[in-house]
Image (tube, rainbow, N blue to C red):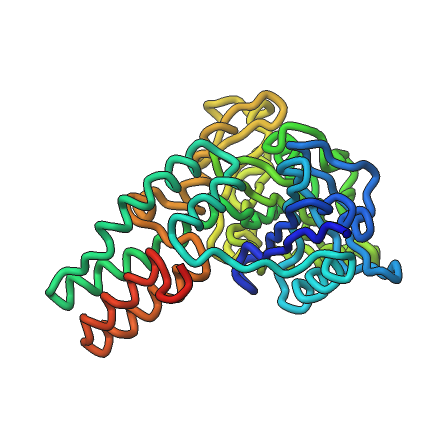
Length: 358
């Protein structure tokens, strides 16, 4: 009898620019080999980039595949609902079966620990059972109860410790975006050249940035050009930027003042001045400076990125890190809006273990 691995969608539909799926169990490698086309097959702990295809050989999406264990893989694809449905359908056609999500907090912690990529994420998850026991005890005062539930809603940024969120590198040609991406990733992923317009298609790379898994997207430099291919790349870059959780705007540090387009770049954004190794300290304009070549400012930039994407003040207590938990917290918030404290308490108790499913 053929083994049938289990397939799960780990991220909320439409949340961010990246969707994360898991395929695990006996036969997972065989299923993926039917659908995933790549230049190399990942060993345990490695990431491979390639194309997911349906059984007819038609392209479904470009994906990043992480081999977590011998028969355990995680796939990152584009987060559009239609794309997610096609990816799930292709993997099911290749032999995977839909899995049932955990129905208890304890099971969710165990499941999330299996895909945690950093010590910070593991510490947060291991603390959740005790922290949630405190959070389930809503105060009798409605305003205090609403504040407690609002804090739970804000804590959903904790998912960024487990699921890659997208950071788009934006800036003019030759600003140093590709060099900065390579420096943050720790290896050459994007081509670096002095020729304007070198990056025409978005280059994506996974990086662990101060404990956060981040999908860095090196986009085409924004400029006026008569090259049709480059214009198309610039338009794709703008679309990628709009769907990103954060825009990392790179300004060539050798230029005086801020470029005119800077204030048109959408929030949330983080501005850095590149090529610090080419500008004397006394000649530098105020702001964050980095040198991709010498490593100056990279550690500080990583810390700032992590703090903007997952603020520590949102992660000090019980955290919402699954769709199931988020649904019950929303019900609790709605009950409190209706001034029904008892219903809010009942909703939160379902986070620990859903009645009839535990």
